[in-house]
Image 1: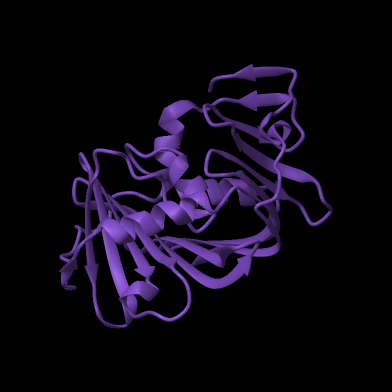
Image 2: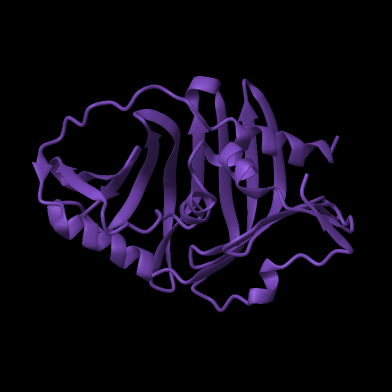
Length: 258
């Protein structure tokens, strides 16, 4: 039963696609330059993360949970996730080295290289793993130079930044002191749309300042239409620490493309 958890987790992640259409934003539009700059500064403030997290996956009322998942990020450019058994055995390892995604089940010698098609199944059509690496740090992918950026703010510093690039639209909910919010600038939610269809949405909760960076200790990815959610809760966390490149390699006797 325990070995089935990684399979269930993969099924949950594969389900993030094709949700309801993008709703209209009811807040008044404001100049976007300052908010876009604040997002860029937040991205620059994060350099790396090493953490142990608890993960809960829910699919149509069925829950699966695992207490020990190792997560390592190098900026938002490299990612390692490893699922462990209660006895400390590795059940599943996913590594993204900035170019290729590799998977290894347990301690098997064989390493799978799923390729772009599997990444699209993981996060939605036309989306790559940079989305996952970004939201795990409470952040968003870098804003491309030709993106269409608009901003909307209401009372109390509640703002939404909309970033459009081709068919992809990202909506970022922020709490902004410059527009009346208390505390510091933080990202509270993130939605990704493709052709006006929601691919997935993310909520960020329980912020804690570490090494000058506000990290959400709870990250919730969900697809409410399919009754699917994935909750990551960080426990033992180090932020903005050096991260060795060697952590983003998988040694094996052979590699294959499934």
